[in-house]
Length: 159
Image (cartoon, rainbow, N blue to C red; front, side):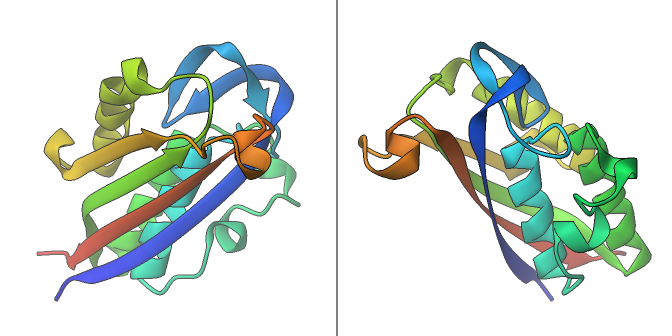
């Protein structure tokens, strides 16, 4: 049986830290504001995986009210999510992620992001799709105030 989950995350630009997306530092852009490292790609993917397994959402497992997760590496949160899935009898199968931002251009970093996510999920890189789109200058993303990410993930029973 295949299960499907959908995830979404958004963050504002403006943090005095590096921009990290999909576990990869993206030079030349301000960081994202958030409790952890604000990696919107990892957060949307975590929500998609948790949703597919009917295990709640990222906030229920890694609360932004907990000091334990302050400045946390979201790739590590993704690994913890994969462990949680495994304990419930599931494993990731594939994911498709759409990143919506005006700048910086993500194209030069997509291969590294795919590799980093695949390693964290223990899947082949061919099972990880990452695409970048603009918002055609509309809304908060179009004005360059932040980023939005949509993710779809499928999971399979372990074994």
